[in-house]
Image 1 (tube, helix red, strand yellow):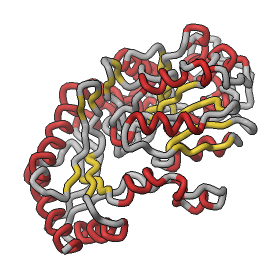
Image 2 (cartoon, one colour):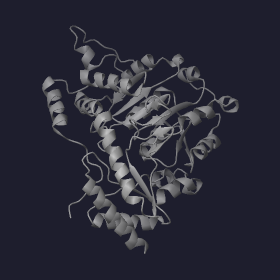
Image 3 (spheres, one colour):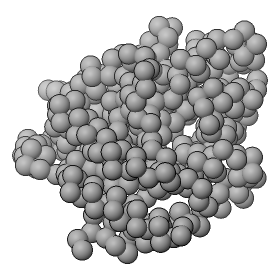
Image 4 (spheres, one colour):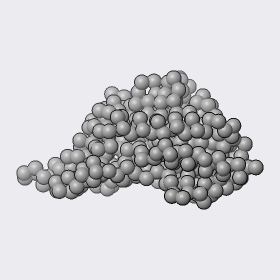
Length: 405
């Protein structure tokens, strides 16, 4: 039986031709394609400004450091997320506060409420699977007088913000909507990932999109972060190519995390066909899964759409009712033995050695563990066919019957 992979990238002639064109142009580092990609992302999302960098991880850590996050500060993230969300906070020396996942949107907001202290500077919600977090509910919480009164600024930029900043982990949710707003314009700052398995891929890569209060000036924030992300250098390669414009200054001991034009070439192709090809295709594939699996009483289907939101259809996160973690793992192994690759999203942070050694306990996040223990992510990618989806469902059903009988 041929193996059905989990999530290979879409590589076709358009992608290959775009990369070849970039290579032959001579611009293989940050250049005109990267700048155009930034503008196109902002236009698509409705963001004020976008900065493209070499990964979600470096983009978000760069922002946190620039914003003044460090020892003595607290940043709230969900326990149920990928390690990058927590790692970037630990890198800054700030204290990572893990909020439990809520069974409902309201419960998730209340979990965040219980974590807020006078040291809280940033809250980082996660759009798991492409479903946008309840940002309107979160902003309502942050506008409550007793929550606002707890905020203590630790930098000039934090003073201008005047409240806890919302930094969306939108690694999964490019193209998702809530209450008429696209991901990239729902939070103060949004971090996107363009990793190889994402809906929109640049092989590796990430971006920060800004929808900040006017007091912070998104153009100025963009300029400062662009400099900080290129060794603190006041001119990038494109600027220095102008006649006689070689001279530059180093104004910060910065970092090196710029995006290349080769990466942006991929992104521009994917963005151009995102609404007309990528999202409709993934939606149709997910609904086909729904149709096949809705007849099984053990299948808890993901909810990708509601009256106030629609996801980016990034993952098909199925949950198997009434099973334990060990049974879930056995089902995954049985599927693999029959040619179907699956995955799990996510192992909660307190279950990893690096986090346990820092005092985090999964017992403090029971809902995160519940959502993880019976979750199986099914294959979902552009070239996945209806026949393959049928095969996945038949193999999965047989695996569940074998393991749970």
